Length: 123
Length: 141
Image (cartoon, rainbow over all chains, first blue to last red):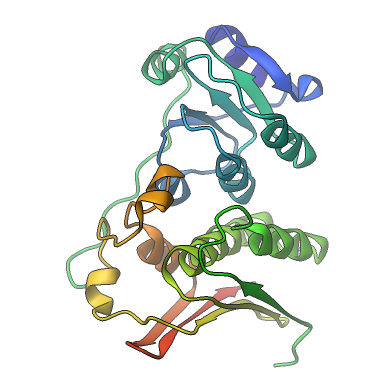
């Protein structure tokens, strides 16, 4: 799936990264908890989140996340958009709730990132 | 092993606004050195986690990056307060993070275990009243 398809499915509007809409994405992750995002996410992932602060972009940059979808119609600040654009992350604003945006993407074939197996006791 | 690069970054306690700036610089520096993308992601995630820990939990400290032909090494050294029970701190889900950290999306108790998972070698030494030193290395293969 491409970021352009993601944008259409979540009924979103591109805020930055109009020129990167044909970038492919392979998985998605829906979370407001950046700690969990840092623990589970892989390459070429779309992050769907209702959390809006610069750490969402910084977390995404560390993980090479290519696209952030801000759900429930929340609008990120200029500062956040500039940070994202600088590191080549496409930002989409979607009117859908996080749950619905994730669900719509999932049923159209975008799988979730696999949770890692818990370490055995005493490891 | 000959050190190709050594850089240190001071990290201020409670500086949530700038938290992550050292990790961003480290990631960009390593990218310029042509470090493999997979290794770079492991280093970046562990580096960001440890930098956030310095901001959230420590009284301030320093993050040091060392690169040699075999590996990337990150050393986080703080001036306190120290961790009373390291085993507990290493447990997924255990967290003593502040409400402020949680508001930003952190403090889920995933930091230390996630660093260990991403690093090739992980070592943590801590003494209450003295400080904590975390040393992580990442094999370049």
